[in-house]
Length: 121
Image (tube, rainbow, N blue to C red; front, side):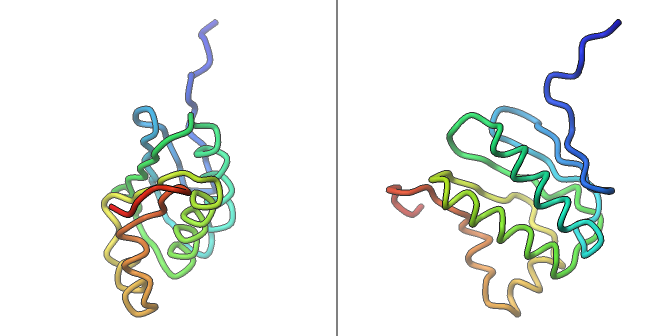
């Protein structure tokens, strides 16, 4: 019998959220209307299990995205800010970036969430 994987991936429909290092995560698969609700919940569950501190979410493995994907990222940022945690995104998909630009929230995604009491970077 083998030991269970120490940090099993959290699957949200076809979206997978995996820990790649302490405080670092990778999102793989579509981040769309079809996966948004489960992806949001899985992300918050996964990030919440991390030790306190900064979090980085690599979105380079996102295969497709739409405005619901943008909503998920904003929800993760709000969760982090409310919990006093830093959260940054790496490799933001161009589709999400374009929707964020039109919605005038691109700067929010690029700066990320900063925990309470911390100076902007």
